[in-house]
Length: 116
Image 1 (cartoon, rainbow, N blue to C red):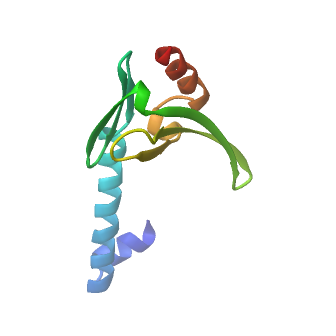
Image 2: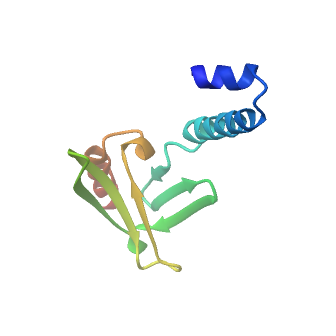
C-alpha cells in the first residue's frame, strides 16, 4: 500500500505504470468473481457451466460427475469434476468451492440426486 502511494505521488513513471497495471488486474479479478460465479447450474435435463468465454450445456448422458479430494499446501480440498467425455468436443471442468458458491460435497450430492 505504501509503495503504491509513493509511486503515485512521486515522479516515478515506471512505478506509475506498474501501479496502473496492478490496479487493472485487481479490478478485473473483482468483476470476474462477482459476475462469473457461481458457474454451475443443473436441472433434470442436464448441466450448464458458465465461463468468461461462454456457456456450455450438456445432457446427463454426456457427463460424469465425481467428487475429487486432494491434499494441497497441507490442506485437504474437495473439487467437483464434470467430465464430458461423451460430448462433442470432450471437456473436463474442475470446480472448487469458490466456483460453486457452496461445499463441493453438497453439490455432488445434489447433482447425483438430479441425475437419477
